[in-house]
Image 1 (spheres, rainbow, N blue to C red):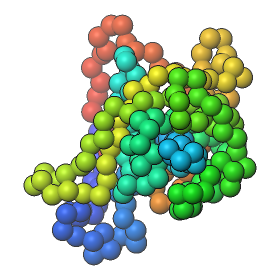
Image 2: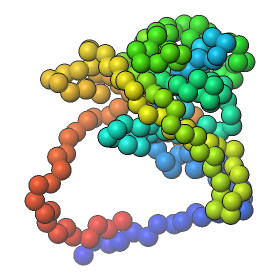
Image 3: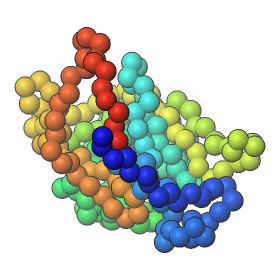
Image 4: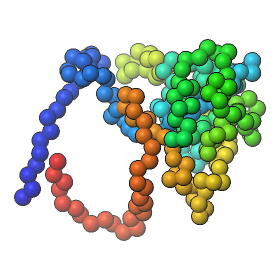
Length: 223
């Protein structure tokens, strides 16, 4: 019989404890939900200034019709522009663009065009009137604002983060990453966010098809 290992557990209650009180050097929360895709959000203000900023609290939330969401900790330039224009573009962050992505994290003032400061190129979107897309990104997703949800705790207290939902109006895909009629992520090399200041690209990719028959019973996994 295989031996079962017992985990030694560290526990903390994020409502009432600082992680350092239980032995963590840094808050582990962001490292636990990983890897996370990165939404490199491009917008334009009503005064005409383009903005480009990465958000790693991001994902798709619907397939038909497609919707995306991202969360902003505080009302930053991206959210203000989206509120003003109702538009934004999600651009795929890639390994090749990691330095420019990191540069765009800097908290520039609202009158600074991050495309210009990072040496990147803005291109007009197809179905949007304000928000540009990132020319260097292999995938750009044009979105119209659906709603903004202000998060609250279970007790009803407001928190700093807000969730922005967008309806997808158009998708740009570089033909160079399409192989045999499928998007080849091994060519695109999307970048993901891990915990702390860590990022990662793709490791080996493998495919597992969904079962068409009921799967067999399996033995207990010992941990």
